[in-house]
Length: 259
Image 1: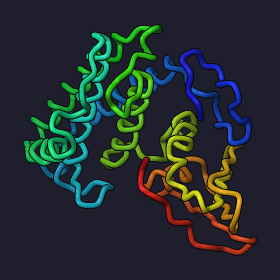
Image 2 (image 1 turned 120 degrees about the horizontal axis):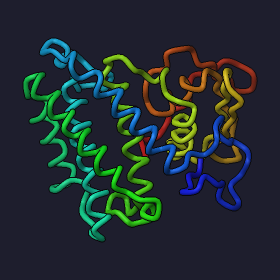
Image 3 (image 1 turned 135 degrees about the vertical axis):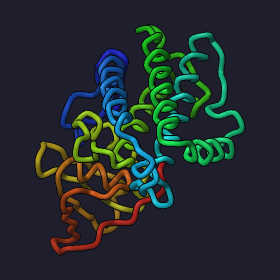
């Protein structure tokens, strides 16, 4: 699903596979991010040592790891916004992925109260940084993925919503909005191998999306929109998914790594 700063569909964008809701504007994404930040903030006062040490939905990560990552990526993307508004380009993390991994491990070892305070402070900074972006600023370049302020905001939206679900503190993929699902369906299209032919068809919304090449047997996966999105995002669907090849039941296709 293409995203524009004024809410229009880019010229040449195919109508097939259009999202169940209109393409998000910068304003609608910023509003969704604001709601997601407050949703996460509301979970922080209930954190205890027992709660944060329990497993998250991500293999090998506790809830504390997920929260430490949300703190780090929230601050990192907020810094992309702050520096872009000054006309500067900086890396997402000083020290790259090794520094990111070290920060998560160190942050996850903090007591529950300190961890919750740190996440709340990161949310404060994220809210302030993105609120400072004006309507004419969204096309400003950022270093992260050689993108723009708009693509950086979209990254924060994805990170915030997906990892809040990963923390297993309440909201899950079943709560993802139709707008978010539509965006993830496009962003995660590179997970489908080019040699595969995959159709995702929602049973609870007018949504059908085709991926991959034009040769080989076609696999059609049907289910609720949020369940299809969760699967494409590498998360466990809450409800069943039905995969068919040539009309017969078949295993779900193998997907590639995240783009």
